[in-house]
Each structure stands twice: as structure tokens, then as C-alpha cells.
Length: 435
Image (cartoon, rainbow, N blue to C red; front, side):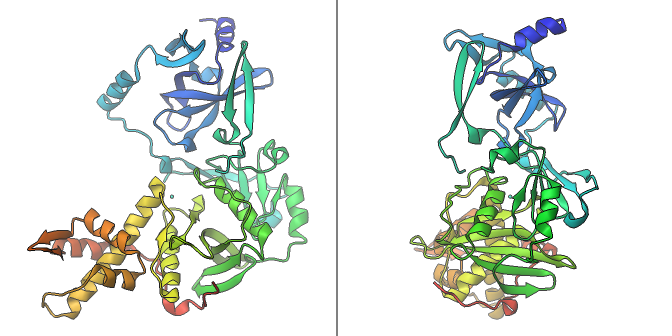
């Protein structure tokens, strides 16, 4: 097919088309749906969502990465449809035959390492790949093509190409409602301490010359080695809290971005070096939760993921619950990645109590209850029951429930604990509940 004919056929593509697209992350053809269309230098580009893949992989592609021959027109809709000559089932069978598997989202995290933010004015950052856990305001974008029109939610299209935070340049995963004029550039530059956003390095440099913060604007309530935790009141530090929520929305697809941050407390984990306290991640919680939730939102920034910081944040939330004399649970439903993190933490927290309880009794048959485990761990009893069932440790015999922990389970737990290098030391927590 000539390039002219190919270009003419591309004009027929509209929002909602499903066709084969070359995925940049894998170099393989994948069924995708067009979510948005724009023109750059007179050439059309298409924002696509890959079917059966996480939204994190959505991207802009040119017409060169699209297979028009694999697309058919649905006459009932009057536009391109999801019908493909080679059906999705056939594509799946071929993929299974070749030993290919669906992409996991964690495998595609792009981070870009830069120099110190105060020295980056004349330095171009170097790119590296890390192959390794919505606020919808009702606005829609109208996209017209070949006489057809379809409305899409702006939140379906990732609007920020890069963010630069301290020494890292990070590729966002999802939409976040930063000002539109900033999103038109290649990168949004954030102050590493107050999270103020700027459109260029020069603006960031001017801000850094005035910003006096070297840590999040709150009370330091925990410090061990280089790890610190700061408590930020959403009512007293509204600007920082809102900036933190905007940052989190770039990496949390289902986060509800509420600008009323007054009812929330934010617990920010930082790593200390000679320049100050740098944000690793955070979790938020309601000051007063009717449902007894001890965590509302949780995020570990991509450069720090897969190092145990997410589990450390979860453990810290339960340490606060213990100080309060309560048991807690995260807001549900959990995301897929959130559920994996909590399953992992619940497993070793519950097993640790059971194994320690058994060793104290010198071989005698121990006796405990779900409520005892819940009080010792700070984990809500429903989550304790869920964990025991998930581990197949809860059995029913002779009219009562019995927890059975075999030697293999104990061995696996000890191996897992040896790998867990980061733990919260309750002696380093200096905090008094205010609500």
C-alpha cells in the first residue's frame, strides 16, 4: 500500500476504533482501542489503550505503528469497531503457542535520573529504564474526524509526559489534573520538598532560591537511621496536601482527588541525605473514620518501589493503630497491587504472632483467639480471618475452629523474614493521637 493511500485510510480512524498497534514497550503487535486523536506537524497521532493491559501502558502512537489492514468498519455503529479480521481469540492462541504472556504493569516503569535540582539548569538528565504498587470533573474532550464525533473523558488520556522530582525524572502512569498550560510542555518540575509545580527549570530554580523547606511541612514523629516519617495536617498545610494528591494521582488510577483535604492526615516517609529529607511515599487517613479505617490512600513513588517501602508504610499505619488502642483496616475495595501488598503484610504479621505464641508454650498445644491476634497486630478481625483462610490455616473440627500451622509454613515465614530488611521500630515512634 502506498504511503498516500495509507495516509488517506488513516483519516477514517476515529475514537473508538479497535485495531492492531505496535506496542513500544514490547515491540509486539497488540489489540488496542483509540481513545484520542491529535495532529502534530500535520501528522495524526493516536492515543491508544491496549486491550487486556493496564492503563499504565496507554500511549501516543503514529500512523506508522498502526495496522490498518487489521481493522474493519462496523456498519451498525457507523464507525470503526472492535472487530478484527484475526479475532482476539486467535491472537491469544498464537501468543500462548509462542509462550508469550500478558504484560504485567510493574514491568514498565520509566524513570530518568537527573543531577541535583539546584544544578540542573544547564544539564540534560540521563534516561534509564527500571524494569521491575480519579478525580473526574465531568469535563469531556470532543474529537472530530471524518464527520463523526465521540466524547471521551479527559481522565482517560494521560496528560503529563514527565515529572522531575529532586534527582529523578519519572514517567507518569495516569491522568492528573495539573494546569493545562503546564501539561503542554514535555515535563513538569516539582520542588522536592514543598511539591510546588513549575513549567521549566528556570522557574524551579527561582523557586528553590526562595524555598526554605528541607523536609515536608509537618511534625517528624519517627526516625530510624535515614528513614523519617512526618505527620501533615490537611487543614494546616492545604497547599502541600493538595500538591501531594496531584502527584499521587499520576500513579494511582482509581484515586479520588478531593480538594477538601481538611479531614485527612498525611504521613510522608522520607529518606535523609545532605540536601534534606526526600519523599519516598506516603499514606493518608481520615481524622475520624466511621468505618474504622486506618488508611485511605497509599503510594510509593516509582524510583523507590520493590524495596520494601510499601510494606513499611503499611506496618507504620498499624503501629499508629496500636498506639490508639484500636484495630484498623484500609479503605476497600483495594486495588490489585494494594491487595498484594496487604496480603503480604497480613501474612507475616499473623504468622509472626502464631509462631511466637507457639514457641512460648514449650511444645504444649497453644490456645488463642481471632480477637487476640487482632489486638496484637492491630489488624481488623475480618482481615485476620481472611488471611487465615487465604493461607488455608483455619480448619473446622469437632464443633470448633482450629488454626493449623505446619513446619513448612514456619520455614517459609522465617525465610521471608530474613529477606525483610526494613521494619518499623516502635521505640523510635514519638506520637500522641490528636483525634
